[in-house]
Length: 132
Length: 93
Image (cartoon, each protein chain N blue to C red):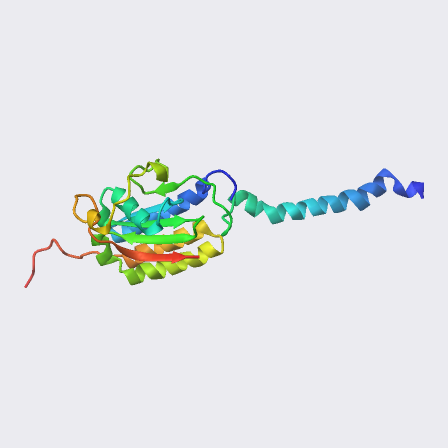
């Protein structure tokens, strides 16, 4: 990868759009970090999650392109909506794209999958009084 | 023989093939030029970190400027604003 930004504006737009859709579908906060880690990737990713405004309701996707590592971290509340098994499936999908050199495609697909897995059906008629 | 190498001959046998080669090469590389630099696994990564949906949308934090990592798992469990337990998944390629 030559020096410069990791993504073109179009690629960034695609990732941000996937993040917005995932947030709208799930009600959770999604965050994507692409960069190197000074330490082990998992504790670093957890630390990034804790930097967010509401870590318990957040999902962080951490990608280390140089170290070829991917971490998906879910907060305590987010974990109830997005199981580790579902996160593992999304990680598998992203891993395949990343191995082929498609960083943007992997992130877009993976975040979409995470949003779909964490999707909560709207609660219909919740505010209506009970009718006999 | 000299008459065969006129300007017209050069144009037909050199200019047109060169033009065709240039057009084909442009078509082949146009998509990669338009899509920008491509990530190649195994090669070094030079781009600065990008954080989409981070604390500040415009921030691109340097890992060196982030707070110190917790000394152990227990220290990341109590304080407000810190995820109590985390789940997720890991992968490498």
